[in-house]
Length: 203
Image (cartoon, rainbow, N blue to C red):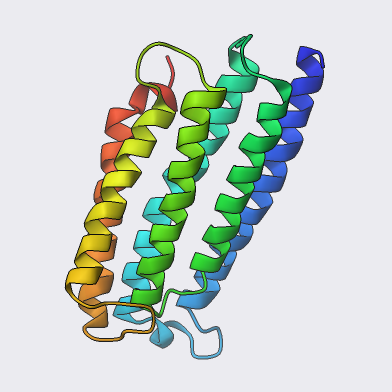
């Protein structure tokens, strides 16, 4: 496949990924606001979880598209096989589908928390694949950094949930859990952008 053909393939796959992410964002908005009840339907829990959702979605979407451009278009990585693109995209697409499911849980903090762990777990798997299979470079890649950040996030959130007996369907102190998730998601994204700023915004 020539460079132009590869670029066209990347754009087609990126467009499909974008459609699913856009659907997830649309569902999140609908889940936050009941169009029949209006603004009075917005609760503190749903708003905080919407913040957590956006704080997670935006850098993940940005990073995924930058990764595809960096590995398959901008840099000539001779050791990257053509089949790596299919595996790469399959993991990204699965990742987007989990976001779509997550967007429907903005009124259920405990369910949201556990599925958020699922989103990050998929991203860790994808990060491991890209770090050792699809990306190049001797220095620590952005994909490897994401894997580290997300693994730490998973451990911290998982430890909190288990320590406080918060499992799927639990509804004790929903506003507190939603607030903590919003803070944690924002912190994760700030660390992400600071540590990987050269990758997100190449000079």
